[in-house]
Structure formats: C-alpha cells, structure tokens
Length: 489
Image (cartoon, rainbow, N blue to C red):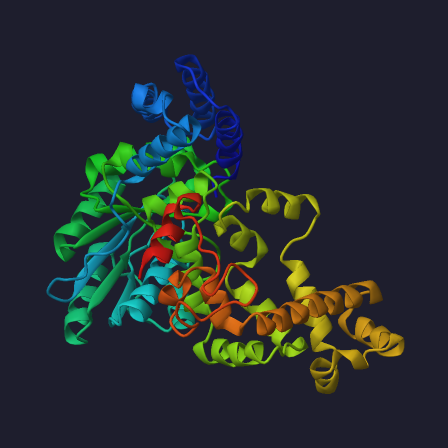
C-alpha cells in the first residue's frame, strides 16, 4: 500500500534532512517533486494542488527555515497535512448505537468487492462488537450473487436471508427487515446490486431500497486499484445517494494509493474501512494518522501491536515468556513464531509496519524472499520427529537428508532453519543473562512495562547497561504512535 509514493517522498525528505539549513527555494523545489509524486500516485489534481499550497505556505515560514532541524520540521508539516487530507482526526468506525435492527447498506459498482466486504464486515461486527448480524443479498442482476453471500455467510458463521427465486430487490429488502425484527437481529447488512457503470436505473434502485430500510450507514465500496476511476465513481454516487462513508478494497495491492488520498476530499465522507487482503478477516478500520505514518516511512507500531494482540493466543505468549525467562527456545517455539508471522500478514506486512524498516523491506524484495519462505520453514520443522524438534542437536547429516526429502527442500534450507534457531536460542539465553524480560523493560525506562504489563517495572535492573535502570529511549527520535505508547506511565 502506497509503496511508490512512500519511496518517492522518502527520497525527497532524505535530501531535505541531509542539509543543515534550508532556503525557501529548497522547500519550493522539494514541494515540486512532492507534487509530481502525488500526481504519479493517481491523486486527483485539485487535491494535489491544495495539498502542496497548504504545505508550502506553512513550510516557508521563518519558524521552520530558522529552526535547528528545518528538514524534520518540513516532514512534520507534510505528515500533518497528509492526516488532514485523509480525514483528520476521524477514525473509521460504524454507527451502531441506534434502535435495532441497525441497517448498513453496501453500494458500489460491479466487481468492486461489495459481497466479500459485506461478509468481512459481518464477521467483524459479530466478533468485535458482539452483535447479532443478518446479511441479505439484494443483487438479482448478477448470476449466483445471492448464493455467493450465502456461502460466505457459512464461512464467517453469520446468518444470511434465505433465497427466494424470482423476488425483486425492494421486496427482498422488506423481507430482510421483517426477518431482522422477528429474529431480534442487531445489525442488518444489505448487499445491493452493482452495475458496470453508474446509471439512472441503479440510482433509482438504491433510493427505493433506502426508502424501505432507512439505513443508518450507506457505505460506498470502491476498488482502490482503479485509481482515478475510483474517485470518479465516488463522485457520482455521492451526488445521488446519502453516503456516510467509504470502504476501499484491495489496498494491499495498490502501490500508488491515490484513490485513498483523494477520496475524502471528493466525497466529503470519511474512509471507514480498508480491505487488506483476500481472507475474510483482512479488513481494518481506516486511521488517517496511522496511514500517514506508513506513507512517510514512520511505520505503524500501534496497528502492529493490535494485530499481534488479535492473532497471538495469550496462553501461547505466556508459555513462550516462561521458556524465554529460562533461556529455553527449541524448534517447536520457532515453528510457533513462524506461524504467528504468517497469520499476522507475513514478512512484507510486518516490515511495512515497523518504523525505519522501509529499506529492510526493499532488501527483502530484492533478495527474492517472500512469505513462501515461512511455509517452507514450517514444512521443514514439520518433517522432523518430536524428539528432533525438542533437541535440534540430534540432527546429523543423515537426519538432515531425511528432513529435506520429507519437506521437499534441500539440505541447505534445513541448515538455514537450524542456524536461525541457533541465533534465536542464543538471543534467548542472552536475555536471561541480562535480567530476563524485566531487564528488557528497564531498557525503556519502565515505559515498555507500562505498555505491556507483566514484563516488570522500572528499576528491575539490567546489569552492565547504563546503571540500575538502564538507558532510556529519547522520545523525540521515535514515531508519534510509539512515543505515545512509551509515554503511557
């Protein structure tokens, strides 16, 4: 997401930060490059022009140019303006506080991902908000559209309205409303029909459905891969239907990101969710601050922590923490870590969320490493006996050949897994020598302990490193999200 734009902006700001002082012309030259980068990322021209004007006006002021770190100040101004462009303080979310059933109407063109997004939202509302959800397909135009939602409903374990062949759209909406009331449903999701393009018949149908169901939310689902076309579609819909928000799909595959940057300005409505993959849990609330941080290479630590919290089982984390405290780490532990990385989105996703990891991510891509590496490693460990996983030192040449043959890999790959395990095991023993997890917490002056209870409080001690409390992290060197996390004391 935003890879091309992020790279271009990163190069511009690296040059600005590399200078001790900046002139007004330096800033204007940099902004010219930023403008080209935005346009190449498919940002709408009026949006790009307004963005550059706002940044330039603030960046050429004397407070910036005469500051100690003018390059860093310009980056902060760009970050603030990006947040504003993406929706300001608004964070994606749904208005569910109303008399049930709360109706959420999904609208958009054919092929934008409405049906899959409906199922994703159904799963999210059920699991995150604990609501009883019913989904209904009103699409009588596309063959098997209603069957598709039924199948997806079974996969996410969310009820769908029974299909009655021959029934028309508005009648289905009425039946869905009645079923929702009878079944004491909290949230009713209506998956409406799409068209290949916006036309009068489509808009008339949308208005009729809205008249019958009185939706609390009308979400426009737009495929971000269509770039500027996505913005045009949003403009057409916002002029005809009372939209409350936008859902951008396929954000994981959009290296340019112009649709996201233009959408808020064009529709006047917030981007509420972003689809980040094909899996039915690959959807996240759209947070302008976090997205701006990713674009500028500052990472997204908060999302990373949230993703870890949602993915990693508490009992597994506690078991590993106990083993780490004893300096223990076998191949079973390594396998658990690899699987957690896969479930959190893989190497690329994790690297993209870590501050300062843009170069590491590029190196990953250049080396040809991808998430298949995690699958191969898992297969290698799975081909070992329980005894070998617990005691890797048993793996002699003969056993390695057997493991390689069983996993469909080469002996060299088996050796790489064993080397990774050795390095991680060495790190676990080092942590034990340095005072365990409490010592690690002391490295952050107690801030990490406050953010992650159970790691030990301040003053736990870290022998040999900066006295009894250990060195503290300079908050000014950290991205805003991590700074906030560490300052929660």
